[in-house]
Image (cartoon, rainbow, N blue to C red; front, side):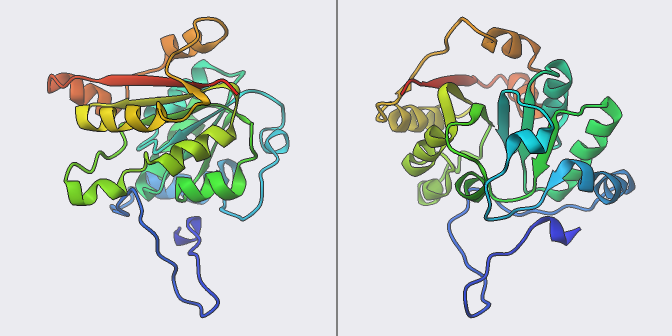
Length: 239
């Protein structure tokens, strides 16, 4: 199971480190998750490589592609894939039990339009995703890293927003949800500084259908129960 994540080494065979936006907490796998990883990963999972993915070959047909970064246990991602069979979905997650749970759910739901990668999303975008190909990038409830000294760990930095922009197709959408006002303001400040994004959601095309069928995530339900405000942000790539 550890071979789901490939370590990056330098020429002296030492681990390379950079600031990450996540903590690699690996909980105990249930038997169901272990079974799913062993039997279903070869079909649905993609190993990290410094090589661009041929998306048509990967999914067996050409269709709009939605990438979700940090899908947790994958319940909402699988439901979206099931509700939108003519759209392809690629989930990125580093939490191994979440990978196992999502694999199990995907097989139970019978979805054929979902693939997943267990690796750092920034490196996946840099090395594996062709430019101008993504229909929507979803980033739901990223860790806000509230302490000022930890702000540098937030995944949403200027360089990341620019990287996502390169990977989105013209008219594609960067869809972000957070229940942190300070993080929402941080996101708005960064993305509004990039000329090629527009802070809006176009009302034509397939976006409304996808949003209507999008199930609430676990964090969204919890935030609502706690009475937290939720900021749902949409940024369209215009050029």
